[in-house]
Length: 478
Image 1 (cartoon, rainbow, N blue to C red):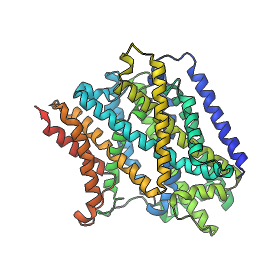
Image 2 (cartoon, rainbow, N blue to C red; image 1 turned 90 degrees about the vertical axis):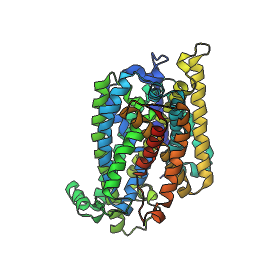
Image 3 (tube, helix red, strand yellow; image 1 turned 90 degrees about the horizontal axis):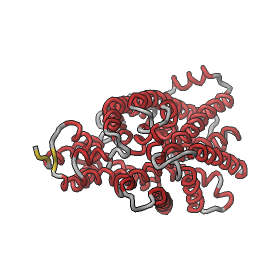
Image 4 (cartoon, helix red, strand yellow; image 1 turned 60 degrees about the horizontal axis):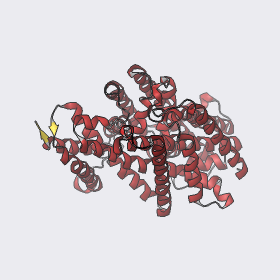
């Protein structure tokens, strides 16, 4: 693809985002950044959250991973559906009842100041690493597709991207995000649908014939019953439930959008309809994966060694200009739909949980909030550059996985708070929240040697949360 064409696509995309930012910032006040004044239509939030939930990792990795684990990932998505139901029926009523801006304010009410700061700090660390990792994956694709052609170094392209994200989020925050997420979800899903249509034309197959290819392929097998496999159904299903609760229901990035709805009922409708759309979207990605491998086999194409490179390689080199353009729009949308909301959530949590900004009357709150927003923008930029300097995708993935361990203490804290009325020795909480992920990581690392070949999958989060829960129980005052 022509670098100028790529530039034009990206420039038009950002122009749309800046236009949305301008329109949503009209008549904004100090609460608009944090809550969108609780005026968001639930159906808009539901559709927009799909793009943020899928992210660049899903967009790039899920179709390629079909070659390794077939449709086993769908077992995890099935668990996600149950997790979203728990969020809708348990967590959303709680957060609306307490009228929270940051969901970690619950920990202060339930346990105390140190538990509150522990939960917020866990989120800030995990979200910074997670957002950086997701944007790093997308940035490497854009670097190859465009910036390398003009000899623009990686750090300069990432810095430009971060500045642009800051520009359209700094004023109205979550209110802008709700609307830009909708645009980004449209582009992301459009990229998958158009790519499937292009594959059908190249192979001269109708929609029914493509469905038959997917249905008859060995790659479409879903269930894995082997007990030691990390892809075992029960492991992935349980992991899907609790990872959804921990990394969505207990994540300020996701819940901040839910809390922009007008009331509890609207927020519940949002989460239920979002979960259905999310499931269908993942079916599309998995089907695309089968068709990508089928297309490569039919045409005798040598595939890249890394499965993450499958979709970008075929879209940019074999499917023609239209497919290349929509792929770039899709990966850009997937990257920014998670990065922009992450920056907004990080800023919100730091302002509310760490510096208690709304209660401080001796400073210019808007100015302070914008400086905090700039600080997190720069922090994410530095983290992405550090990932690139490591120059080892497996190491970067390990860092991302390690960040996922920190959600275990959050799950344990909320589970303990909601399941009993015990009070705890608040000063012990930071040590418990440090110890549980360390012990979990040691267990995960040595599981195969210690447990006769057994491998933890997503369910390691449950182990992590259980260690936290036991620690809190030991620290409790009945």
